[in-house]
Length: 136
Image (cartoon, rainbow, N blue to C red; front, side, top):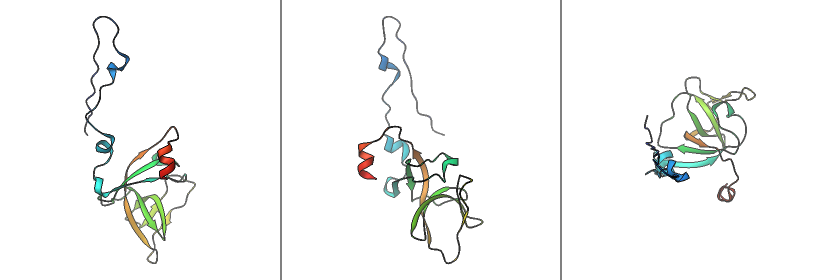
């Protein structure tokens, strides 16, 4: 695990700046959130089937195509022509929801199925963004 060093300074006399607790980090959000920039895409979650793993409708998903999916990874896949976000059970060839209200989806021989990437991060927006409204 990598730690981001944040230090706070305390003034001895007088009033310190309210911003003194916040130092500029030498990282960008891109560097912090994306490991393989040329193999990463961003999508928007739609629906309620992944709430059990903290992915809610409207969340932004960071999907890494460079990674090989492992059992129980959250993935984005093309399943019979539809893009879906699910947990993959490789052993039993199933797509699992993280909400008990949704059924398990078997991956059968006749299905068109490709894993598009592994969801490595999700971002929840607490205020509408004009940029995201134009993008998605």
